[in-house]
Length: 342
Image (tube, rainbow, N blue to C red; front, side, top):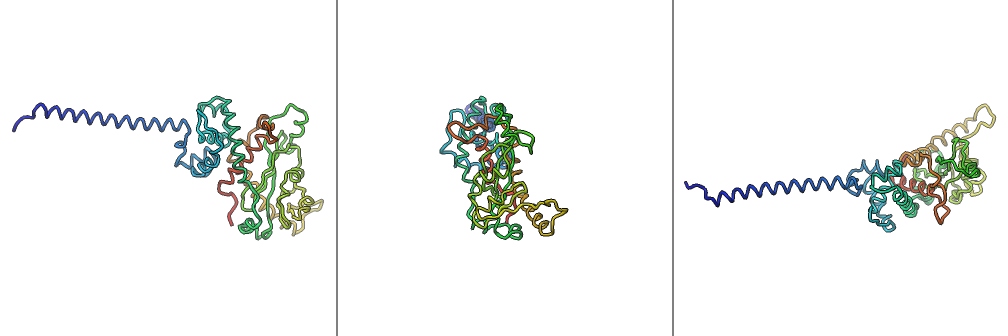
């Protein structure tokens, strides 16, 4: 048997070298892929959240990646495309600030931006979100309400309940102006606040959110002046807390309000009042659950808001906090309801 020729030996060595070279190429390609993945995570682009709904919920409050991309699609025509950040990153930055209440400096470090750019991006994106998502907070037609009325409401009040109302307050910094300081001081919260009236449907969707009012203003005044009464139709029933002394103003719309009964100096309520109060309290708790859901999802609403967010935006009468509250309510309406379905 003849020995291998020198040419055969050279070919074998070349094949071994080719295999080693291919293995090195494959290793470098994999390393490159991993590095790109790490960079994408640090850049907070779509790959950071794609296919991981638990991360979407944590960083945005939205239920899944598909819903997040649906929001982006609605906003995309009006989002500026900057040199440093994509439209997706602008929306994610804004949602993370709403959701986690991250300080401006923290967000700046995460996204590789300066503080001013983060502030401007947040304010501009909130304006776009407010403009496009505001219609999600809408008053439904009566036939839509009645056709899907939850059974617990039907059992208590038939199909008449149109809205459940309540107010919540958000703490703000103490103003230097004495008049503004007096108007915003809440004796209930013992601090300076803005008060918002929220209305929900029996199904648990947010159907109304007012602008912010100084914490000193009564629930009655907010209800009468915020515009919610204009949505009522004859025969509608409103559920409210006992602090809402709005029977007359609701009556002017040929509607009715139900609030828990007072003892009015009596030793105790009669049997009918006790039963009515029990029904109202059992159903009115849903609005408290929705308020808790909104504030639980978007922690910025639980912080003390700086005065820069409660002065009117340039060229308009609405303050930034009003837009933020409306956006948070609209985003909450994109999530499963906390109220039991019919």
